[in-house]
Image 1 (cartoon, rainbow, N blue to C red):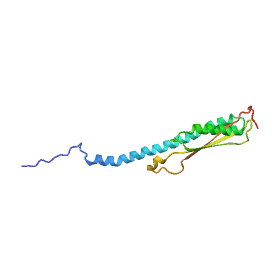
Image 2: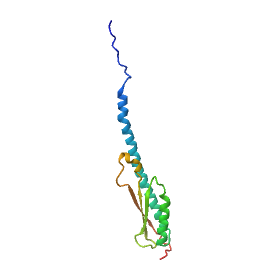
Image 3: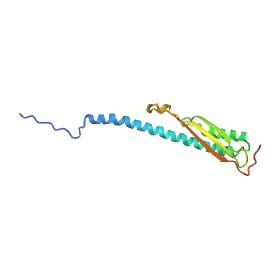
Image 4: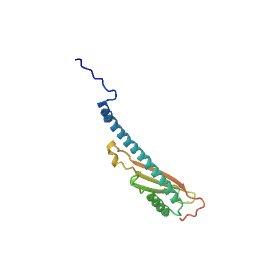
Length: 145
């Protein structure tokens, strides 16, 4: 009796499927985490920029430096409340030419990106996003000394 040779099934890939998944799955997860890390950095920078510009505009609408600093701080704090985007925000207000009509108000906002949940991919380093915005005090605005 002759033994019939079994032909392999062309669809039976056996262990190559498992090996492919074992190699591709960690790479796909790492890529997804890297995209999350990069997008979180972009979001943090955009948040810092928007908060700085709004705070500078609010400060430029005030009549004296004390009120301008208070307005900038209030607007900056109101815009930086999302802990997922910005951790420990700081808002700094200064003026370049004194608080005079036609002068410039400078507001700097620093926002720290949250990376504690991305430690798996080694998300460390400088996580601060700093943005400085300028606003001109209206030339015809009455300014208190």
